[in-house]
Amino acid sequence: MKLLTVNFLTCAVKACKTSAASFPLHFQDAELERRELEYNPTFLQNILPRLEWDAILTIAAELGFTNLPASKPEGQPETEEEQQVMRSVHTLLLETEVTEGKMVCGNCGHEYKIKEGIANFLLPNHLGKVSFRDPLPDVFGDADRSFVLV
Image (tube, rainbow, N blue to C red; front, side, top):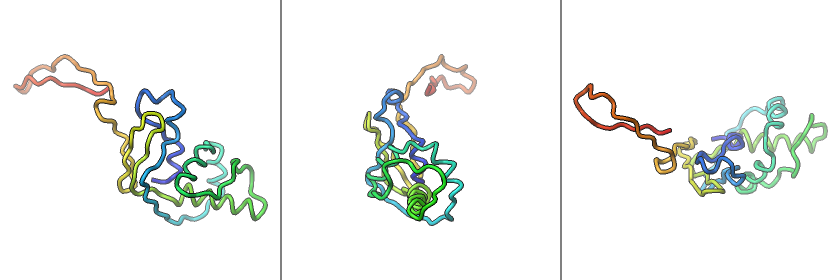
C-alpha cells in the first residue's frame, strides 16, 4: 500500500467518524519497501493541494522520514532545493509501500492489518450494526433465520 493512500483513509468504526483523532491512521510494525517509479512532477503538482500536510508529516515522522519541510510545497519548484523537496515527497508518497504491519486508529485503537500490501478494512460484527430481518420464505426446506450487516 502506497503511503499516498493513507492520506485518504480514516477509521471505519462508526463512532470515529466525528473524531479528529481517527485521522491519520498510525502505522505499527510496518515493513516498508521502496519501488522506484519515474519522477512525475505534474502528478505531484496536481495531488499536493489535496493532501493534508500535517497528516503526511505525522506519518512520515512515525516511519522515520524526517526530511520533509514543515509547510506544504506550493507552485513550481524553481531552485535546486525546492526540486529536492519535491523528489523527497515523490519518494515518500509514491515509491514507499507498506507491505506488512497494521494501521491503528488514534481514537478507538482499532487495528487494520496490512498483508502483502493490502489493508483489511472489514470490521468485525461487534463493531458493525447488525439488523435482523423476518425469516425468508422456506423455499429450500430449511427454516434458518438470516441477517444482514447495515
